[in-house]
Length: 136
Image (cartoon, rainbow, N blue to C red; front, side, top):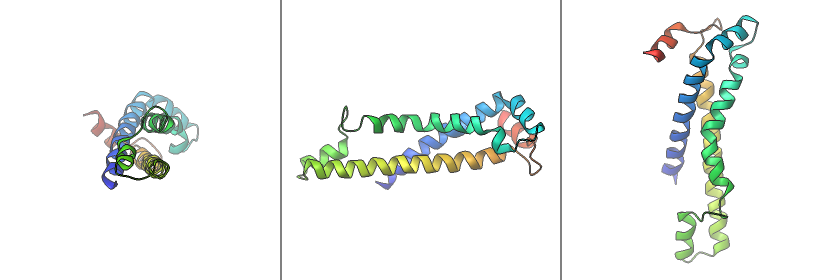
């Protein structure tokens, strides 16, 4: 169970990190303009973080949306074959997917918040050192 949660969050985190990197590099001018007008780095990159979280969480949300309707997951069918009642197996399956969804959301928010901070100096300017490392 734990390995499934870890694998899920690793995949989501990598999608989020890649999306933030590409979006920040694409919209660098817009972010710098917002910073020069007095926005904080968090305010200037809010749309970048939102888009990255959406892209990272969309596959997990899609799976949860069709849970039990289109797809009967392997864990649930294995429990039913093993003799557990279908209702009890469904309850366990919902708990499992809630764990996956909550861990995905939590890791996505933490990952994106920590990664966004790397783009800026303590003076709330773009960190040219970090940007150069990303470009090479």
